[in-house]
Length: 156
Image (cartoon, rainbow, N blue to C red; front, side, top):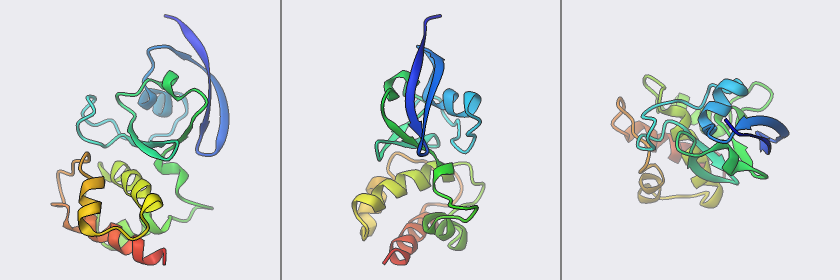
């Protein structure tokens, strides 16, 4: 199987790693780097559990080849906490009960992070649109939307 040296920045740290050309970003993150916050859900780009940010934009790690990230910046859920403290968005999900089983939470938070970076004060319709590719099997989305709204208010 052909391999390459992948030059990529992961959570602010530049890396050079040997990866097979067929390695999915999800597998590279979880298996090679030990960043297990990004979840394997559907394996087909349908649930959003594996959402990460690539150059600040949400992307599905289960259908993205690691090699496509050459020279790019990839951010996972692990990048949001600072010095062991949750980000305002992570704290809002915790405080507003935006998680139930927690499986979809990393993807929801990363999609929400991308939204809040480009629109610090989104309305409910914008939040729903930004999370349209993320499926939650537990909460019914009300608490998730409230969590994003609370995080937006906390950033003021």
